[in-house]
Length: 176
Image (cartoon, rainbow, N blue to C red; front, side, top):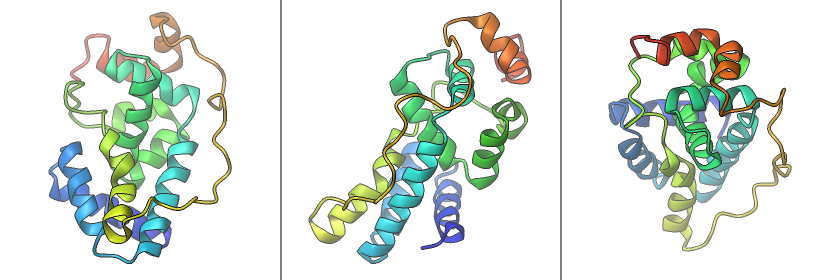
């Protein structure tokens, strides 16, 4: 499975789920079990590589602005959600996390930003196909610390300075 096929599966499942992250995960599993185990492993490798690329201080700050919770668990689920939004949103956010102010449409922190189950979709599909756990993906170990310049995720002033457009839209009286 190449990168284009990976993103096509992400997009198709998101569109069919009408943006609901839980339904997207279920639909993604349904689509993955129609593939062979090697393709599912390739999908898992693509997902995990992007998940690791999104381990960045500024993206963590974006999650803290959008979700008002800077915890590591919330950030892990946010990275899954970010991948689930598709290539344009994902790559745009990696390039400049403050661009999420323009890339994200309506955002409700009660229902958006959390797609933990997307992170397990390939594992679930692989297990359904083979009865075994997903094999080692052969990826480098994830970094111990996020990339980029550290950010105090509890400091609202620091968040507003680092992500001014995102802060203005979602925290400073913006439409959200």
